[in-house]
Length: 134
Image (cartoon, rainbow, N blue to C red; front, side, top):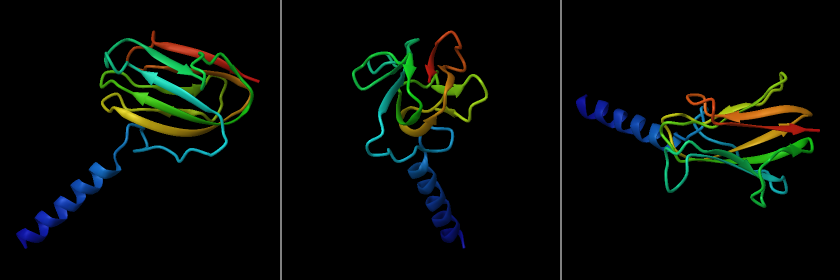
């Protein structure tokens, strides 16, 4: 009986390790081919705990204004002291975030409707940015 318990525990631990991701939902979405991609980051590769947060387009330009539509948002969370939280400011359905204690890359497929959006680090809200969707 003890061998069966050990095997069951090993399977549970392996399943948890394989399914964990940096997103609060335990992982990310499959990128949508052809949809524009935005790139988010928190911390930096060189300095994971740096107080830096960004959202840029494929050209590396900061996102300040976007047309409404579906986007792939790829977030690289380098830090275990920060998170990347993306949400609508005027009641939109967007509310995605990475874990403070997790690191790694996650992809969200998000449909942005017209409105105001923000991204920030929840533990350090002075790390933030905003953009408009029209």
